[in-house]
Length: 456
Image 1 (cartoon, rainbow, N blue to C red):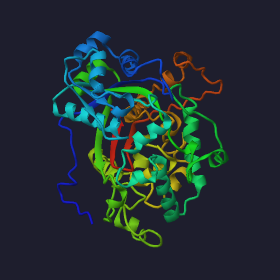
Image 2: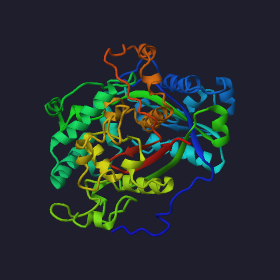
Image 3: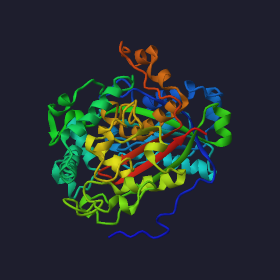
Image 4: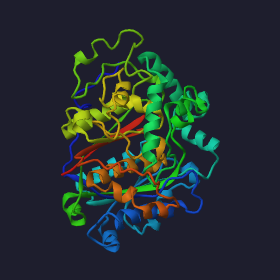
């Protein structure tokens, strides 16, 4: 049994406030053969610098940067070690220092965490975080095997070298333990594909019914194709600054109030029983009956300690008492519908065993208490792995700045990526949002970050 010491649960703090001031991204596609990775990253950086109302010109911005963090999940795809060095040179940042971060699906979130640490410590005061993934250089089958090697190759790989198979087992166990009908998971897919329909950046938009989801072809029982994220190509960028530089660059900087990380064993079978780590909105009374019936241990095979750890630290760092009440929007790492409903519990939207209530209550929708994945998420819009966690935070930043319509509703933005804005396009801009949260998740829960952004 894991037992925490007082140092393990020390709440992090920033020595200096950290802000995000601008973001950009490409659209996301199954193949993007007409542009190489360096071009995609340049396009995303150009959007961040030229289209976010910064108060300095691009050359002045280049002269303001003093550290860069790069985010790429797998060298395998592009067959290029030190790919960040090429991108760094292409973006014109040589000879400035940089690092490249790799933590599986959480690479984007971990990269922003690394940049925030640099700014909060005073090491740097203007740090672009640049993320991308090149997943079209290999076949889907080979790509799946690359991604699947981010789980334990000694054990999980025997399930077939496909992440959907890993999560399908979780789905079966979770449904058994909590009596969750497949229809509840299908509602998540319907929502996220629909919200992707309103984004020019999206790869998998669509208007589907629950029956459409349930009757779609099975990838790994019980998960259908429409319940799984897509392999994507694309890039995203977010710019972090200290307070002085943030207001020099922007009249609308957004405070990165907290970003924290958690981990757990790569091999899911090694996850030992322990007392539930309680979030601020929970007490021991919350779980007095949890271990009755089919549930025997926690976190077990159907919960993510890494997510709970990241949320515990970030909530306490940012003063969050109740996530449903305190957040105005949320971006989860919905690589699969099952991982989404698991996350609802891990971050305290509902107690363990009751995650389905969050989607079934309507609170996760645009007109609900906590709209979730208005970006379309990973299921609807993208999972270009190194770009994903960054993309989530850019979408939250734009919502807080009131810029959703500018980047999602302008017909010229749709034309830029070779699409036509739908005649029935709908604005998903929230009214005066103040605070948002993003969860960046890796593997079968091996690494997770929780980021909280808010209006200053």
